[in-house]
Amino acid sequence: MTHARAALPMPDSSDPAVGATAPVIVVGLDGSPTSWDAFSWAAGEAERSNGRLLAGYVTPGIEPGAAVTVGVPLDWAAAAQARQQDAGQLKDDAEQRARDDKTRARNEAAHLRAECALRDHPTLGRWLTQQPNGRLRINTGKVKAEARLDGKYLIATSDPHITTEDVALGYKNLLEAERGFRDLKSTLLLRPVFHRLEHRIRAHVLICWLALLLTRIAERSTDQTWRNINRQLGRISQVTLAGPAGTVTQTTPLTPEQKAIYQALSIQPPARVTAFDPT
Image (cartoon, rainbow, N blue to C red; front, side):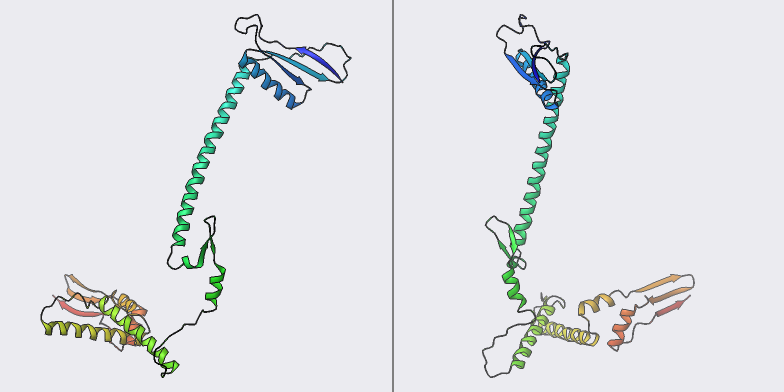
């Protein structure tokens, strides 16, 4: 393997545009792709600095002292175009990275908002713990402690003389009483009271109490909630059809669910035709 020096076509140093103090850039070539990449970079540097480029080519099988001419003409326009393409590619990559950073930041902000909402949730937040880095994880200790109490509840009483069954029954009756007051105030519209006289107010409260009694009887007879009973029976409609032959009033056909409710309450369902007036 021998070393040879090759003079490549470069800008003339006598040219005023180049100048006598132009730098000299030296690059080595051995025929490998990486060396040619280095040569391309050196050529670009020489063009930008208006300098000279000297290339040392290393190849086997050449006697020492032999001259080697490397016929690689330098195309300055092609090199400039290649650099512009590289600059454009770098710009596109930078813009893509900026878009990716914005998307990542937006997703991270949404994730943080979701974590904060989950942490502050009145029911789910107690099962979570916040780590020093701000991330949330499930508190397995609390989960195991609550799992041991599944299906169990504790009732405290101030009367030590009543039995356990009476305590549980009284607590359940308390729940029913509270549910009754809620139904009176919401479903049965106990309030607001649009009366001023005492006997009318008493009558209004009595009517609401009787309505509550009927709803509880209906619920126990049908084994359904009053909301479901009201929804099913509220779908029954009565329509009046008039024509040249006369007028007829009829009820929409009953569904199996509606028939079951009437049968459980021992109430006669409405007739299919309630009125007929022929002309």
